[in-house]
Amino acid sequence: MSIFQRSHLKSTEVLREAQEDMFHRLFRQSYPPLDWIQVEISSFCDGECIYCPHTEYRRNWESRILPMELYLKIVPAFKKTELVHLQGWGEPFTHPDFSDFLRLAKEAGCTVGTTTNGTLIDSEKIRELVDKGLDIICFSLAGIDEKNDEIRKGTQIRKVLKSIEEIHRIKNSCSVDNPRVHMAYMLLRSGLDDVDKIPAFAKDAGVSQTVVSSLFLPVNPAMEKESVLAADDEEYRELMDRFREIRNDAERRGTEISFNIVSHFAEKSICPENVGRALVVGSDGCVSPCVMGQIPVEGDNEFYFKGDRRTIETLSFGNICDETINTVWNKKEYKSFVRELSRGNTEHICRYCPKCFTSDLQSVDSSYLGLPIDLVRV
Ligand code: SF4
Ligand code: SF4
Image 1 (cartoon, helix red, strand yellow):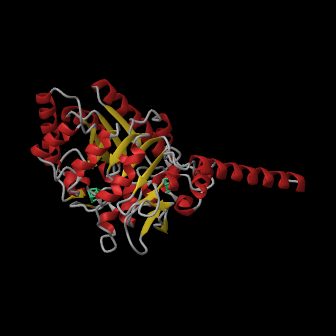
Image 2: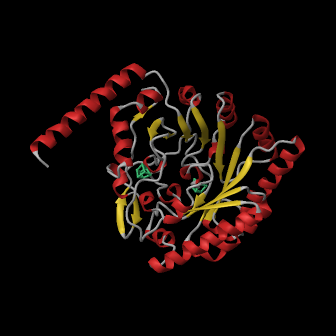
Image 3: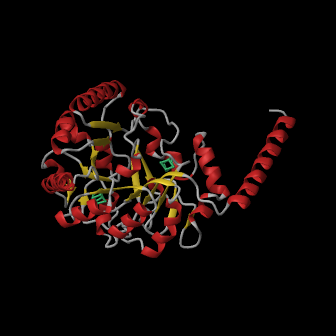
């Protein structure tokens, strides 16, 4: 590149930054139009799933609930947000104010969803959720029978199925369609034998949409083995064909299944998360582009990917304790991060984030079920 070209590029960059500054000054009061905001209302959890950071990093885990006064600072942004998902790294129904959070998001006109392990909801709670207009309730499972309970320790598939049945019963008695029941299915290598049975299981349970995910954040070497679903590229392609068949089977049965699988054989690609039109607020008020940069732990905690041991890093551009959400969103460094990420230029944890190695089945499945991948994590 010539000196002239270099100086031209530099002045273009300076001009762009000046324009961004001016835009920011003019519009800093306006909230961004967002597809969704994910709010970690609680990082407490009564479960001990074997693959979860909450279990592996238990000594460093920060169990906390989002105070109502912080939630109220997010509410103005809901006016321009499609979906509010009340869940992060924890069990949302451990928060005593869940119903008020739901009410406030509904009053702002948002679609509201949550993901739960199902342990803390009973008939009374379900009736309240129906009355308050919850749109989506997603249950987390890692199996279609009691093997689930071995993986998702502290939870019970029997209880989840009973809750789903009760949701349908109450919806029918009230003649309403919501909440729709979704399922977030964690597929470990040891659970591959049962994957073909998921469509029938989902249909029988009255689950309308299922996202089957492989493990994105292996928290120890044993879990890294569980996260690799195929031994080599050829086996991996066969597996993708099998998943397509399962998806077709689900369609024939009248339920939807999508797969979100990390590939250990894929080249690194662009981050699949919707960082340009969505954000995550942690239970401490930190604003992040995704949940991967928002794990509520202290100290050094490791994860394992492609044979390497990596340290968890946080990725946040501000905190609503100190600033409004639109101030954080409009920060130059946040905008620059989003822009560079979309070009494949990664820094922070994104340099080696497993989410950048998702399979080509994900692009086949780009009609993704209407819920962002992060929202169906547990
Ligand atoms: S996966 Fe969900 S239910 Fe299980 S321990 Fe983690 S936060 Fe709790
Ligand atoms: S690359 Fe990973 S850490 Fe970075 S924004 Fe995407 S999902 Fe989050």
